[in-house]
Image (tube, rainbow, N blue to C red):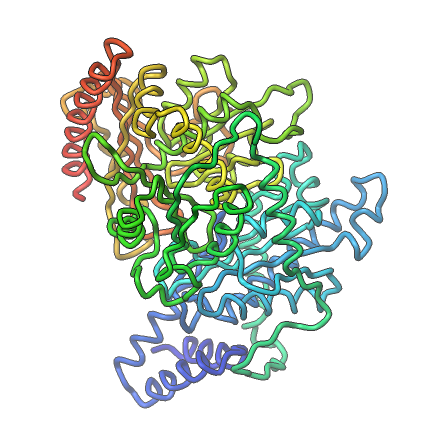
Length: 615
């Protein structure tokens, strides 16, 4: 074990404000100095690098050292974010008509939210204190809340920076740090205004990461001053910040209720079972549904209150097998019409319906929910007027990410409605001009892009309830509605193959191998076109280095599409499969036959890609 590493660990302990992680490292350091091989190996592993700051910000397991989420990593991240923002604001001053717009203290605003995970409040408090000490106007939520509530307040307060402390649907021991830019800072970086209130994209992520690295380098420089850190187990809300309380939640609820159309879609005869998955959406979503007229909303009590240990969900992602078991049991007991579920920070929405054809409950895929919501909005029109425009173009548009199904795009084409396909992630969907609805297959939906520039599982739950209640009033099941969409736009079936890796550094190895030896055919059908988004744009788009993405897309003669990409938030490589079929008529049996054909083809794709990727 090198003297340099011992010096680094010693300095880290001096800087660490958390007595728990300090003690953990000090014990390892003492054992390592006593020639304990296991302690030396543990320290070498903990200090083998640093968490990478990317477009998803940070996300990792809680623990000590630079490769875990802890108070020192968060403080350094916040200090780097502050330094980056102030540098860009200084550059913006000559670019605006009124320098006070960016120079005065009132323009330096940050809004900070957090979920109910372990240490989320501590990370939020540390961030608020760092910005407050720099003279910024810090707005901090008084209690844990959903991510879309934070995203909304970035716009409401025209804040330059938004921070949400959350690990979304990751395992209980994880936490994360998500960054939004807005206000004059965002308008300076993206003069078209399309990025205001949205999550960061490249090159901002790289620039922020570089600035964080500068802060860390200064902290560990040989001539750096002795740190004035007083460790404390109790981290309290900092004084001198603006506290965002119940009035913010009430305002969000009122704005969400404005999305309903009680005249055109008045029906509310719907029994809903809802689960918050031990997250922060519970009270807010139940209150919203009931205020919207859905009085028969039944909460799954075992999963209603926020609990950072997620006792009934080891992996609290509504998409995971078994995650909705308690909700489905409740739905069967209470003869419900619909099951709704949020992930722990309530930015995603899952749903299940009873399928009379199979006589069992069926969880809908993100693509199915996206198609249903998209058709509903095509029928209703934009849910809120005043969508974002760009010069010379005021036509509303619907969008979805490239890994989502092509079905909604086909439906938009049938109806003459503008549609755009974007790179993966709501950071790109939020930047679609005039967006009125966007979705991604990972159960992310935005039904109100005017007010929330990110996925929002809260307002989406309300509009999906409106949709299902309308179908019920017309004696149409949700499954039948999916068949109607298939009859109009074509039948598209999607699935996934996942390759898990132990080491994040191996994520790019799978796509690198495919570039070395690209498949000539998949499941017996010749590959007719290959797109490599690391050097090519999406069709109709312009390629820039900032939009380069480690994504490979294959189209086959049979009409299949296969996409391979490393996950941006988890140690896995994802392979997205889609196959298509045309029904011979609008008749139910013809659609069923097409669905069976597509399902058979999808399984062939799954088998082929499982073998090719070694999953």
